[in-house]
Length: 86
Image (cartoon, rainbow, N blue to C red; front, top):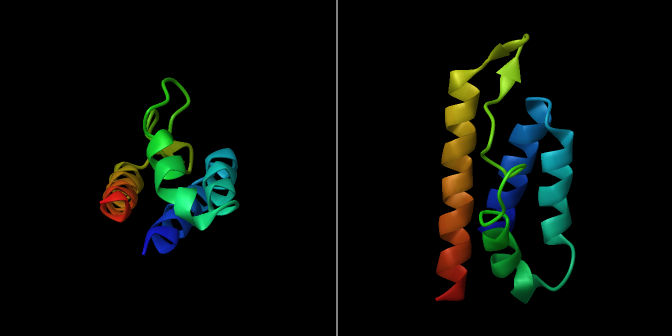
């Protein structure tokens, strides 16, 4: 579930022109599987340059629907990481 959530969000970032964020998420999957939940949660504790800092764009304009979908996918990923730590 968690790996799928990470991949879904990474794919969404790729679709909306955020390859660096997608690569950062792809990188989370590398490494020890038991450390994945903590690596995921760490993505939410950083300041500027974080996953949810700026809106997503398409056609040179803010895409509110894509940004909301990103937020929803991030929430699913966050909750899946927390659940795996319980």
